[in-house]
Length: 338
Length: 292
Image 1 (cartoon, rainbow over the protein chains, first blue to last red):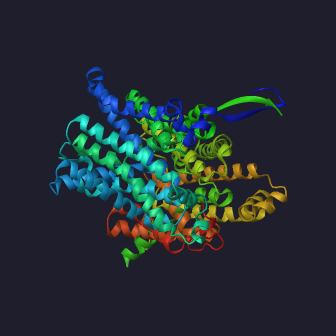
Image 2 (cartoon, rainbow over the protein chains, first blue to last red; image 1 turned 90 degrees about the vertical axis):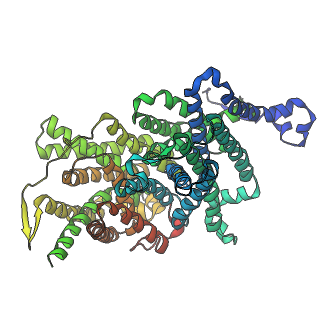
Image 3 (cartoon, rainbow over the protein chains, first blue to last red; image 1 turned 45 degrees about the vertical axis):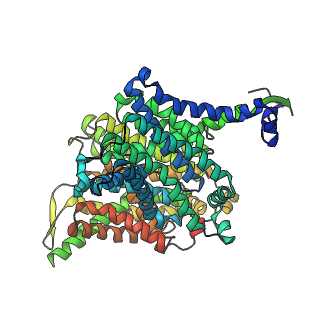
């Protein structure tokens, strides 16, 4: 804080302005300015599995979970962009896992087609279940996403279908750990960069308009319901895919797939990183999940910790850490007299 | 005949239970438009607080109950000023923040291991009576009476006190109310505190029916939302009707299909009402686009 009579002025860096345009092609420096952060993130994601001799298998497994959570968080951020605030990402996660298990065990599919089928079917089933509440905004959609995973867990517990409390065992493994890691990393890169591109396109504008003023969009003659459904389908896919791959990793999918942790963690990650950009949600997950792995001994206290982080970030840094860092990267600040 | 009477009576009790649980949430949501997802957390917190005061601190029953209700109201006030106030009017952030607070309470209790059979609140009246061949414990009758009493008390509060009138004014015509000098934040804080206090009342009355379990907190928020959606927010009669419908529905479903199907009823109610009549059974002026 400075004394009165000054205000903080925020300006784009020169290089940002030059890199915004086709003039970015004029120099390597500007190209690197744009591509650098992206390349760095991709290098970390693609390079970490190769460090296995140094990190050991444990942290490689953690990495797999981190990437899965990044997918869940990205899916949350994408849905949030359309105004579909999900309080139950575990719905998608669990649906992907269970349907993959069903495809593998009952249809005797090999593991990779099983994951693909499970993820697709999971997205379709979830979107279908949520269709009746798509018409309404906000709270009601959130509520139903919150209630459905709880409901599924109870039904599985009560009726003992799909393995009951023991879990649905016998899912064949999908290649080695490295293959699974690369599958998820690939999915993450496609999700973060591909969906961000979609969001930056005219379709993305439409999706944002649906969130901000769906009556206005409807008045323009655009079928809001159909767009929301499509967005839900697309947004659910990364999460169901993560669920499917993790099911082949553990060889079993249990009621814990519908647990609250898989709902609260992606949510907290997305808010921590900032959901304005999809990458923000992914960065949030990358920060949060390793931390939670370190705190594994504390059991459900971790969920309490996520909630505390969520509230603090919502109240204190509502834009999220990634947006903060991004602004620092693109802009500089100075104090000017009013 | 006996079956029918039994279903009717237990359905009535269940309706009263649902009404008690949902009343606090509905009041807060109706008055201030704040979806207080921490409702379930405060509900269970009140249960444990009351248990502690009774069993560990050995306070007399009325004092313990009064203290619990006061504690819940204080927590509600704090919740408003510390968490909701900074993100007010950002519906997404309001939902997330209150949800996080509620989950934090519940999971904290789970971590502390408060899940054993010793956590049991005493009934207000013990013993049982027989009505037309159906045996029912007195506590269940107290619940029905309390639900009716609370409903009437709220009705009176909304019409006969200055605070109640101000709260209703905020709910109906916010800008006019502001122009009349109603203090916005204070009213919203009162709304959250009132809702939390009602959650505590519900905890003291409803939780003696079983053991205090963490999952009841999640059920509570589900019940509250199902009733609020079904009944609409602007009339108490809507909530009452929704409570009766869902109470009878869940009792019937658990008798016919099995005890695990009551949640399906709540969800079904939400989905059907939202699809057919988005402003609730008796809702009138809050149409589709006004809903958050």
